[in-house]
Image 1 (spheres, one colour):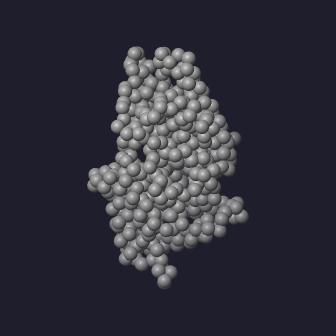
Image 2: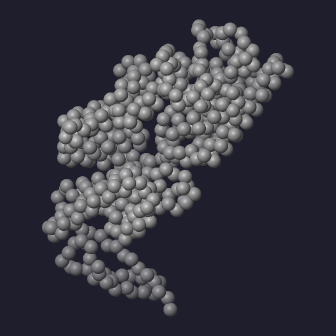
Image 3: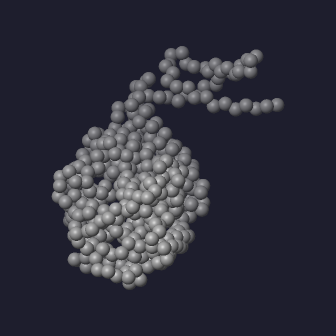
Length: 517
C-alpha cells in the first residue's frame, strides 16, 4: 500500500484508507426506471465490509467542509490505499473518476455494481471483473446485506494480503494490475506526485457511534445532508432550507454557474415548497405565502435541474407536484397541463405506479374541466389507458410474492391497484382488493385512500353527467349491435354489423368466440 505522504510510519501502525467513488442519495437507473438509494449501498454494504478488515472508507461528501471538494476528490483518488467504484446507475461522474484512478494506480481498485447493470455494461468495461450486489430498488434486504458484506470483506482482505506480501517479499516486482491502462501499456510507471500539504483522512468512526450528531467544527457535507433530512422528517423546513442552502453554496463556491448535486437541489426545492404550506392559527395555509413558496421552489429547479428537458424522474415528480399544487390554489388550467406533462414523462421513464396513478387522476380531472366532446373524451380515455398500465405494474408486483414480502410499500401497491380498477370501472375488483387488505394497512394509508377514492368517484360522476348532456355527435357513444357473420369458402369470416345509417361511426370494437361441434 502507498505510504502516508507526511511523517514516515509503518504499515502496521497506519489504518488503511479506502476512497469510495459513488453518487449519494437516491439516483435513478434510467434503463429500468428504478430508484437506488446509494447512501444505503455505502452504509449497509461497503462500510461494514471495510469495518471487518479495519479499513477507513469514506466518500468525497464525507470529507470536512474545509477545502475544495474537487481537490479533495482528486487527492484521495490518487492517495487512497484502495478505491471502490460503484458503477450502479451508470453515473457519468463515477466513470470519469474511475478513469482517473485507473490512469494513476495500477492496482487496488475494486468495481461493484447493482446486478441489473451487468446486463448492459458499457463495452469498454465488459472484460472487467465487476462484483455485483442486489439492491431491490428502494431497499436492500437483510440477507443480501449479510451475503455481500461477507463477500466484499473477504475480497478486500485478499487484495490487502497479496499487496502486503508483494511489498515484503518482492518489492522490485510490479503488482498484478487491475487497471486496463497498465495491463495493456506494458512498462508504464505510475506518476509521481509531491503534495504541497498533508491531507488528513476523515476520522474513523466506529459503527456504534455513527448515528451520533457531529461536533459543530467537524461537520462534513454528509453530516449536513443527514441533518437536513432529519429536519425535513420533523417538518422543520426552514432549518432544512438553511442547511441545504449551505450545501449548495459549498458545492458551487457561490459561483452563479456552479453545479451542485441534483439530489441536494431536489431536497432544497421540496423543503421550500413544504415551508410555504405551514398552517397558521386558522389551521389552514396562507394561499399567498404558499404560492410564493411554490414559485420559489420551481425557480430552484429551473436554475439547477432543467425540468423542461430532464429525464430525472425525481425532478419531474417535484415539478409535477409544484404545478399540481399551483393548480389547486389558482384553478388555472395551465398549471394542470404542466403538471400532467411532468408527471407523465416521469411515469414513462420510471414506469412506476405512483407517477402513473397520479397522472391518470389528473387526466380524469382535466376531462371534467373541458367542454363535453372529443377533447374531454380523449382525456378521460387516456386516463384509463394509463390506469391499465398501472394495474399491470401492480399486478406484476403482487404476483411476485417473495419480492412483495420484502417491500416497504406493499399497502400502497394494493391501494394503487384498487384505485386503478375503480377508475376503469372495475368496481368489483376494487372492492375485492379493499377487502383483502382491510386489516393489513395503516390508518394513514386507509384514510388517504378513502379521500382519493371520494375525489375519483366525484370526478367520474361529473364526467358521466357531462357526457350525457353533450350534443349529439360530439362525444363517443357505445352501442351494442348484432353483426351477421358469414364463413367464406377460403376460410375467412366476414362480419356485417347492423350499423345505423344516420350516425357517424368513430370506432368499431369486435369481440368474437368460436365454438366447435
